[in-house]
Image (cartoon, rainbow, N blue to C red; front, side):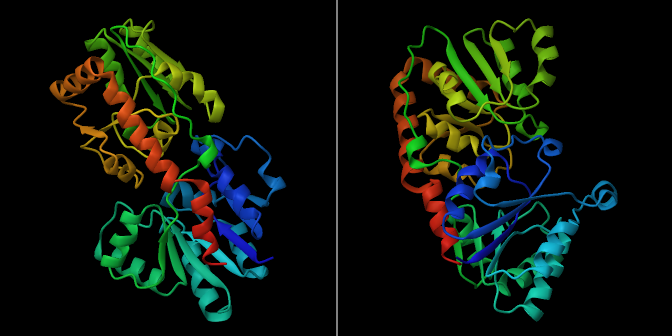
Length: 353
């Protein structure tokens, strides 16, 4: 079998199925930083049974002072062993990977080097664009999150093979469109994900304070920081917080929920909404991860979550027309089942081995 190395930032629970299935097609080694420090959920099973998982640490000085990650174990793995293909997540925050890449191009030309990931960051300086074009165009290919990003990279002058692995964590069998509970004058709203300021989850608390006809469940690591504010506003009967829930643990919560709310930055929550056949309402003022395109392609609602009039209009629409909930959730699920499954992701990775 081909020897494959993945230089990843981390391997949280939502990468578990991809790693398991890909490991069946090659001899796979994967690196991962400590998940607890990053507030991510670890895989449920022992992923080491399927691949050689190397847990790594970055050098503390560079991480704390310069906000970059230098990972010695990745350097040792790359230099001291022979690999048929290296998949490296591209980011200027991991500068040692750029030097490893240059070393490979000079001394290990038979190894395929493939850059993976979002590729684009928040910095659009000319030098950043120049470096991106140089490193990507001298590689053997690029795997990015969505077809939209494939086209964007091509338009930016990247001329090596580029494919989307349609970022997801679901197998086709995971998708189950749940029936919608009757709306008894209250709309049940759910949010799932780790707490981060950029996700603006507090907006949902203000919504519940303003409207008594909504009930909200907030699920994910770090949600306990919101409990004081929920108690302060006297909303504990209509807003509930939960810790980490994944897989089947989420099913009863989505059976309860009518819609998914994303009042800030959105990512894989779009996929989670589609897994259970629930529509998602996304903020149109924030920057989003590439997965937002799934919502856009299926006609999900994008609104200004700071505009009470827009928010009220959507809530009233859902309450008065439950069939819209059913139809929009079904559309989201169908696209995910067709294009955004781990089985399709593995096919994209296998193109380079």
